[in-house]
Length: 224
Image (tube, rainbow, N blue to C red; front, side, top):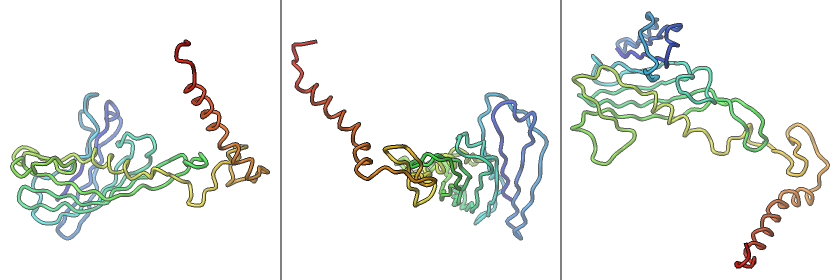
């Protein structure tokens, strides 16, 4: 059985119950339950804990959803999802999964707000120190099988999803952007600016900067 718990920072736990997702790999049963609120303090960091004590050798399916607020990233909202398998081989645990979350972003071309689902693969390895590689790998974590009953994957999920956000994040592939001359959103309205005007407007600021830099270059060094 694979069991996952999630918790939030601070006193929010006083008004919120833990949601616990339980997974029984035998027969593929998927059970949901809610436990009573657990004691939590302001010092407790948010966590997404997957219980590993008693985990059977081989592949163990995992499919869970949790509050995107746990990711502590303002663009993420609604529900985040983790779906995949945890493979246990002795004391070695390998998590292979797909993670996803809904996001609200600003288009880098027209500045409109839009929503998009961010999804990416996740591969994590949890091993005892004796099995850890000599070269540091951010996807390899060490743990003590004799004392650790659960692994926290929240930070890894958060990092993977943030890295999956496109650097050029467009509201749509054919976004026309803003007119560099008048600033109108070309997705919604047309403007009367000609191509020559647009080119002049786009380069005018750079031209002014170039002239100022040239003036500084030839300035008399003896003058303050």
